[in-house]
Amino acid sequence: MCKSRRRDDSYSSTEWSEAFTLSVTIPIKPTVILQPSWTQIFSGETVTVRCEIQGGTQWMYEWSPAKLNTPPTSNEYRISRAAESDSGGYRCRGRRDYLLTWWSDTITLTVSGKPRTTLTAQRSKVIPAGGSVTLICSVEGSAGWKFDWFRRDSVSSEAQLMRGNEANRDIRVSQGGLYHCRGGRGDPAFFSEDSDTVMIKEQVLSAVTLHPSWSQIFTGEKISLRCEIEGGEGKVWKYEWRAPNTISPPTSREYRISRVSGSHRGAYSCRGSSDYLFTEWSHPFELRVSCE
Image (cartoon, rainbow, N blue to C red):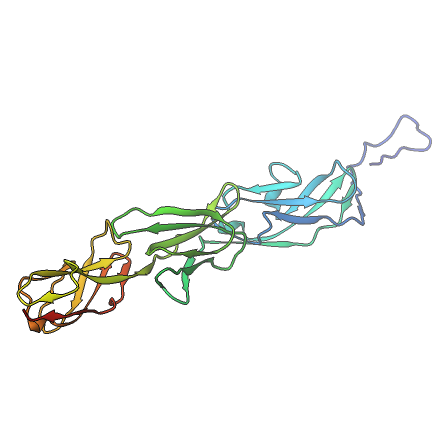
C-alpha cells in the first residue's frame, strides 16, 4: 500500500491506497494422489484426493476445481459417496504467507455406474468323479477387488457364503451346485453387482448289485437288481435302467423280477441324477439264469 503528502506540508497526506498483493511462486511442485489409488471408481464408493508438498509445513491448499476449496483448504478432499458428477481433473497448489507453489499435474478421476461381475468355469462345467473344476470371478475394467463366493445345493435353497474376502479371483470346487460371486473393495467395503449364476454338475459313480446276492440264479426265483450310487444317501434320485427285452424299465432304485425266466438273461445298467449330481451308465451287470 502507499500514500502521498505535500513536501511543504507535513500534516497533509492522502489516504492509504488499496492493497496490492504480490505473491512469489517458488519452484515446488505438489503431487495429487488418490486413496485408494484407483482412477476408475464407481458410484457410491469412497475416495480421498490428497495434495502432497515436499519440504516445509503450514501450507494452505488451493484446489482446482474451485468447489474443492469450500469449506476447508486442507490437503485432503474426501468424496464419501462418489457420483458421476465427481468425474474430472484434480490439481492443487500450496500457499503460505505470500508464497505460492506451482500447480501440480492434473490427475483424472472417472466415476461410473456399478460394475458388472462375470463368473466363468474354466474348461468344463462338469466335475469328473473325484475331481474338481476351476471357477473364475472378474469385475469389469478395474482393480483392487477381493471376492465373495456363494453356493446353493438346490434350486429352492438359500445361497450360502462359501468363501469370503478372497484376494485371488479363482477357486477350485469339487461339489455340484449353483454358484455366483461378487467383488468387494475399499473400507467401508463397496460391492459390485452379483454375477449371473453358473450351474456346476458333479459326476458320481453308480453300480448294479444283485439281491439276494446268490452266485447262481434259477428260473422261477424272485430277485431284485439295485442301483447303488456312491454318496447318494439323503438325495432324491431319478433312475434310468437298461435291461434286456424290457420295453418300459422302472424309474426306481430297484429293478424287481418276480419270476426269473430265460428272457431275463443279459446285461443290466443304471444311472441316476439328483439336483446337480449325476452318474454315467454303470458298468453292465451280467445276469446269468440257470434252468432247474
